[in-house]
Image 1 (cartoon, helix red, strand yellow):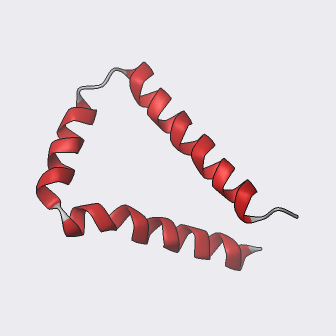
Image 2: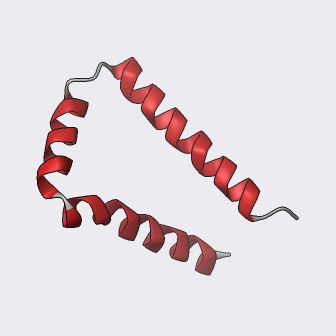
Length: 63
């Protein structure tokens, strides 16, 4: 179990680092826009991200 959790964390860090590595200017611009979001908008983005991740987990593990 803990091995899977570490693998998931490592994969998340790799995926999070792709955009700043490949397109730092676009990442910076996107980050500046996100800083201006209200709390409700940020919560919606976070909730959407979590639900998308849960959906991908469900589809990847049909058992």
